[in-house]
Image (cartoon, rainbow, N blue to C red; front, side, top):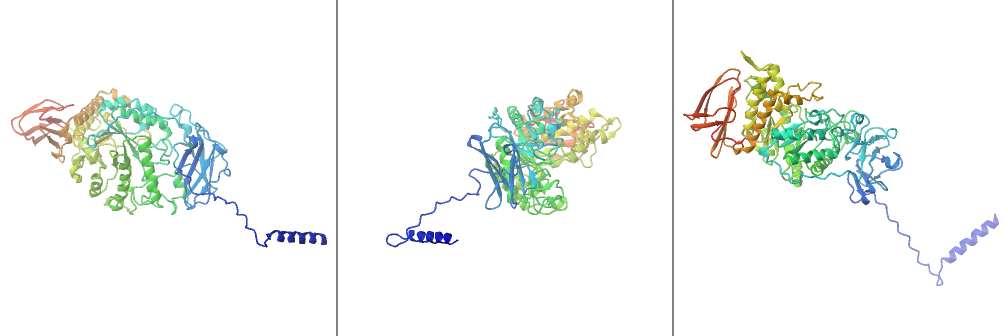
Length: 632
């Protein structure tokens, strides 16, 4: 013990003496090796979702999850280990990120985020998902070589990423969009248009649509929604096309083929709400509804027409997300426009009835102004259609900025086709009744995905007067639809028809449930009466597009009575469409404005000795008269 003490004493003395220089001064201390602090900020170029670097051999994953404690990255690249890749939290606590190296750029990798060690979610920004519940019903013919779900490795929906995705070469880059005033839009649900329910099978029908004369297709939502058999208004992933319709490149090919035929493509965009499969809903959810700290959603919906979980469009997080969705589809898929579903719901003003919901809302206008600026900055000529149904003064505020409003004429027009006249005034199809200064702001329609089919109600509830029978009489029902179409396409401004309306589709909207699959009836085209309706629609559309008179603002009309007419004048031509929507003969007395020969696009020409056309019209009889022959 004494020996150990002596050794320690000598060591201390030596140490003390070594600290003295020859002059008895302390030597300068050796400077420490500097330590570079590890940055927790997002790496340069990182953004929500996945960004590839190093020629696709590295990937940076980023999740926006403010307030969460930890996030782990699991996937094929780390054998789904929850501990192998704890993600780095940024100093502000809003983002988690991780970099994965040594990946194969040509390989698809499935992955998920594990949040706070208890919640597995897919990437909200992924462009493809694997769904263990619904994917087994997607055939190889629809989606070849679909990656297998990592069964036994994880549960729930997983994301898929790949650096070198199969490329698509666009061919029809010279496509010029139709002027808004000339739009004839065909609203189409891929699921119920062909038995194969794919983009590729729909491409095979484009010649049929081109023959009809339409120049735009509005697709019901195609981004990933819950289940396979949906209209698509229950969205969950906003950057991933739903696989039930085909691959990402199949969708691009469909758009490209449409452009090659002079047809624009408009996507139905659902950003009022999300459904429960959305990882953004799941991240902040109490089991019943979003929690108060959810960055994107309201705890409770702000309006009475909401479904799913209501986006808060005054939230900066929601604004940023919405703009990213908008930019992605505009740039990645070269679409020509959006129809925004439930656009009136982009509000934080609480309402409990439609009157309050529809009233002018300055906050809603400001939100849409912001999104409009984003779209215009990318493409100034992009079509923007709002399903708004708000106060006329608010719709005017949007129309003056170049946006278009969905305009539902279904009730009045169907009353007219059924022969019930009391509420058959469809004058709301005229832009002036909305206070608009231009017809291009109103997309009017008699049928849409959301409305009962004209022919179904004609056949079920049509009027009867002696031998003139609408109810149960297909030929008469279709001729009345033709007459209604003559007025619809004569009214200046963009127009829309729902798929197979041109063939008199007559299956109840509630067949198999409102949003359930409907029978696909291509055999209609072989029926002489239905084929005649298709031909009439094609002729009316050609007349609308080939004659400037149907763009005029010099218009008089009366749609309030049994005899309805519209008179349009442009330059040296005047057109008068006149029809009897009663089930009994009625006399028309209309000032045509001039005497002489009037050409009839759907019948015999007439010669007027007086400028007043006074003629008895039979039930369902209509004419399209013009002072100069119409191009059709």
